[in-house]
Image (tube, rainbow, N blue to C red; front, side, top):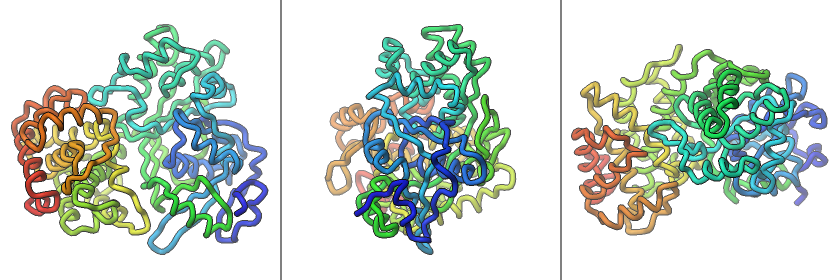
Length: 488
């Protein structure tokens, strides 16, 4: 089959939306670190919307920080790829054209730093997941002992972490007499802009206090809230896209029709008119971010662990299970009193909209995918809510069950005795603790709760929390996920 390229765009079926601008006039304005499916379905589509309405000053250079896979798939396609939006009424197809090139950081980190440091680059955005920030999730501070940070401090001309790359590029810009670019986090971290600012400043201060002060005085680190369900692309998805567009596309992305992006409007060197595509440019992102992290992400993670343990492969299957749907309602009832509603939002309606999105049968978002990297996600998604509920002397039954389900999941064995592929930076630690504790819920819960990087110093000494988690974990081991949830 003929490959999707600039030359073959004209052969696409009429129902496929394609770039309505001259791609040859794109100039590099954005460098994006961590060019995964989410960035290509979210930031790139919003940017695509602006290019259809204004001059092409905001072409995107994508950078893969680990592997060459994306470059190898996208370069033969001139950076073009299909965004397939799965709606219950049927698929919507769009070719995204804003991606100018893809670089691979480990192959030539100096070239990537030079691109970020170039005068044309005005925004460096990133989606590197929580673990890519090389920080302590419980405190938000840089881990100076992280192996990537240790490497980058010793090899400043060949950084491999996102923080190290940003600091190296900002140092080069300062030396060249240029102002800083805007560093724009698009990851699900509370106060992500402030966290990134602190990490960049802390890293810079470890080698050059003057640079750290310059970044603090002149840098821009807007907070953002991003929202769109983007499942991992499968071989079946690739085959489906080929059948729909009549061309081979090795790099399509799949997303739900819904999307949301709230952005603190603080930029150092200009920005695209993302609001033309529906982005919300606001002075304060925190209310949107807080609502989403607790209500969407907290529910997503809890449902992923319980759904996986109950034998559900996807979120739509899990949320369509009446027992787990009742769990979600109970979970949101515990979460909502801790969430200040953003202006114009009714939280109960938001919860019902989330349930409808979870149940979209056209989206196959694997529970295993959402369950990844739980050690980095629990503090933001569940533990903060539990802290607040304990202060309110309010019930935490559903929240604690979410934590217990995570514990059962990271023990590495499912309800049928099969091995779970636990993908997490602390997977080896979990395996060691699970081996020592076996199926003893008391021993396992106490051992996992002792991991201060996840649970901090206070929660492991809150008896209401520890008892609830231990009780739920024992029930999960004894009766299984569905029966435990039904008992609530």
